Length: 453
Image: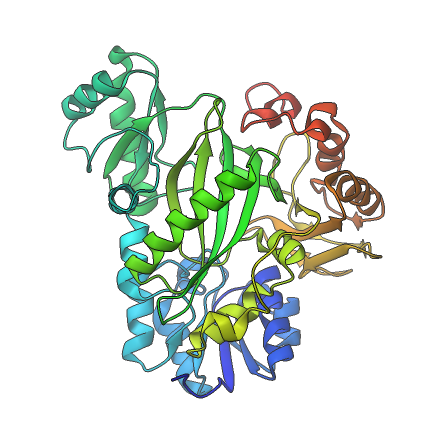
């Protein structure tokens, strides 16, 4: 049976995702509590929430990652649940357990499921066992460079070393020859240990020119699982996504159905609940291979919302209240039209150097099929302490061509003065003939990058 509806939710995050969650809560009639660092005192999420509590200084370790401060804020304000957004504590099983112990609902998967999916080699082994295609590679964490060498010789070069507990491109090294492996193993292990407090590595076959495809999933707390189609995420720099779209031109209807069926079986068996994203690489022959699960809402979720008509954040909240998917979803999931998202970052579009500072002028575009998720406004200050994401610009069209033209129009009408943004880079990408034709892979953005970047 569903639990009682939430009356108040604390958002353990900042920026545009905090505003997005507040918007969903307002539509559900749920009060919100914002937490903020001293650097975010005048941020939009603080203004729009029903209550707001300062939890520490600017540095994330002493504010947005400070679990005792967040739990104290939740207890003081008597909330029913905590929504972690993405990043920060969203995939921290220890934090999810603390929420449970404090009798506060964590809006996300169960701690054990987060732990299973968060260790990449465990997730690979589980998916392999469930019949989901996985890249050839090591069958567990590598014990030594010698073991890595033996595995690489079995599957053939090139191979890639990856941090088992990590993501975002850190702790990763491509190995082209046997004599490179020992040195790159040490580098990857050191970087993984510094970034994720775990030096564990695994190894898999390296695809030189892949497409990055991810499937959006929703699971309820009654073993119901639904797949909301896929997103194309190949336009990225150093494993950081810049532009996403849905659906992918590279995924056939048959492939979508086959992968969807496999993921339903696997995620139901894992007891997966709430929103999540299952990421794949597509090789030059069009075959998909599982790489990881992100057990949270993704930055790029709006493109899926456009093509399915499903509010993913509201679905997250309703799932956490104990509702079944058949009560939440309007009917069978179908994909209609095409959507594109551009991440508008506060950074120099030529050098990619972050550009914090005061925004002296701000105008967001609008019109049919245009959505802007942002926390920014005229005269706000972009702090230097956090991710540079300023806004997400999403457009929808009846087909991909209309979505592209609408995005070009919206980018030309998006005004941000006082700092640099990535808008000019997005305009160059959208105008590229290969992008317009759908001919790209994860190396595409290199043509727009200065030497050495």
